[in-house]
Length: 219
Image 1 (cartoon, rainbow, N blue to C red):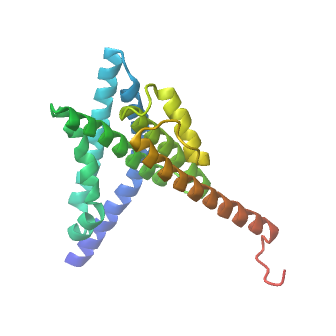
Image 2: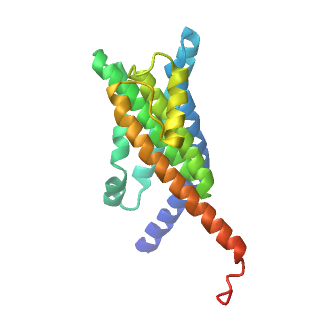
């Protein structure tokens, strides 16, 4: 009886987690835009509003993580698979530190956390390979451009967004001599190759399926 009760509880928890996937996924993508707005906002009221929205989103993410941790059938398996999320959940709290280095780390951590959350959200919301790849590429462009802007590689955000988009899609060289930019452009070049390889594979599979829809081995 105890085993059956445990199994039923695990199935109930899994069902609830699946129902939360879409709203949490949508919130994750919204969070990416909120973090972008925080980096660009200059008006005090807008800075405050986006700051409050960011913390509300983060509270929801923390609540979801705690819920899944408490209701996980196997605590050991859960923490082995999800320990790294604690790092991204803790990074935003560095902004309460007074040291300038920690404040910059907090901003970078916020961007990276939003990128990870946005990528996971795309996986929750989109099942098609092309749609998922498009959404993740958008997140990569926004995250990389924000990092370039936050770290001072570009004085304004527009050129950072433009160059990051080109580097992500085509592997172009970033128009700056900043040290981090040199590292990032290599990473984006590798990502662009992976994107084109995935697109080529998806298109090839699509045309092969259209050519032989019935899967007749004699054709």
